[in-house]
Image 1: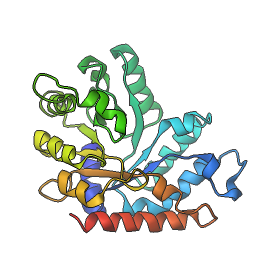
Image 2: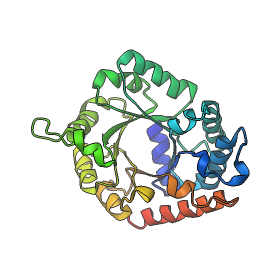
Image 3: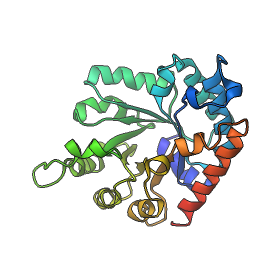
Image 4: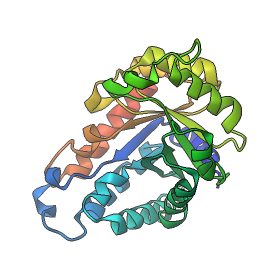
Length: 270
């Protein structure tokens, strides 16, 4: 299924704009998982199974797996999501960015090895560095635009001929790169005015919005700035506030409760 078709179905069927980011840090796991060889997979699986009916997507961050030599557990996790929760698309958060020949290998890794439904990509090397991902017409390509970190302004807000660089990126993606209808943009919740600007430039292009929860982004401001006319258009990510709602054996129950509260807070603003 096309990533965008799956995403739009998840928005409707689950009445949710929430994406749970899977950033597994073994140092924060419940004690009963300590030292277990498949602890990363087991932790993430429990979070996934507890929250799958509340989300429009899951977003595993590849660095949290690769740092612990757990790429095989990432493969198993994505397979588990596809098998047990097939209506929930998986976004591989990798933020890849390199020349075309290398990008082709990264695309192969994301879409054929890990079987992700979408990937985050850094577009600041230009179109030829993005084309290998765009060639997978049914897969989502989610491009960094205005990121949630404070230092993002160092480059993303530079003047680019009468517009800010992130605005140029937003227009390029919406007007020139989205021929397969598989593009989306990353815009941080910490900058709601800039979410609104990107929405104005890109019409109904989906926006992946990190930065609520632990990073302090305001849910009401985010939804008001980025929702489309039908109350959708957003993939609002929360990671640590949900994953580590408890460090006891009830971690999955606590994660579900946190996800439900976040989903309700988002829906109250739609």
